[in-house]
Image (cartoon, rainbow, N blue to C red; front, side, top):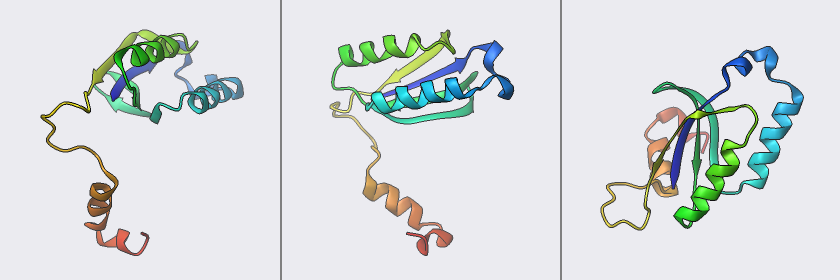
Length: 114
């Protein structure tokens, strides 16, 4: 699993620079990249976006990273990735649907919506 942080090119950060062509490019990239489970904007650690993706091997991850860095509006100098080996024996807690359900049910207002 890879958690990748990065930034949009500075000249494209203004909302008026986000055009339909760019939105379509991202939508197409995400639809073709089935390894992506989260692609979201955010803030923190000096980055404005993150992608969470799953890969069977380091070479698959590396191929994905190469495609990602070729996107025309990303700043490749800002990308940082944290790789998690899901086969490692020393995991404290991994995300599962049952854990996510328990977490959501802790909030009383979610019980009626689930």
